[in-house]
Image 1 (cartoon, rainbow, N blue to C red):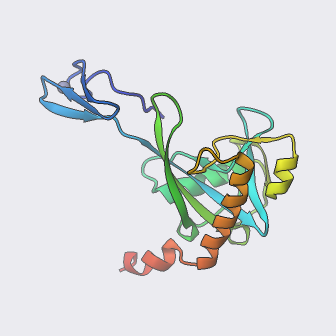
Image 2: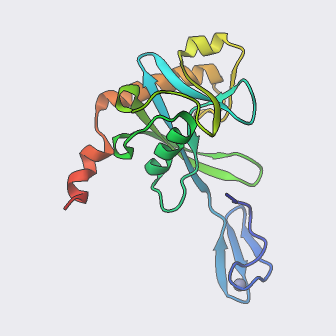
Length: 197
Ligand SMILES: [Zn+2]
């Protein structure tokens, strides 16, 4: 996955002029605009009573995150998230059962901006035994308090308010995911009858 500011026109190869940072570039020979857009990502908060599923990042021992990643063409965001969940935890889920939780735009590097869509699901609505998949070194459910008292740290915490502490974020995330699931309106509830027509 690449998402860096463009230097050259993808159509004719001419060096681009930056018109309005960080999004708008122009190619003079083509007399056309070139846009630098965000990459879409997403994740899923799997809740089991008072616990949240986290995976240990293969890039660093003791560093955990919620299962997340970048959808691949031609996946929808929720299909990409379901695949990432299976790759990282071996748990299966029907993408249409994922419940929308929230979305956020954030810089993940100096030149890279991501838009992430987060979903919630109850452990009871997933299938399979939990174990670390190919993209994680460990996977387990934690209560926010257990995690706070552990030696471990969270990375890339999906929190719209970046000034909150990570541990506070985990409490909020669990509670909001539970509330979203309690509303019990899934994508399948909303759209499946129409899509089947
Ligand atoms: Zn051009």
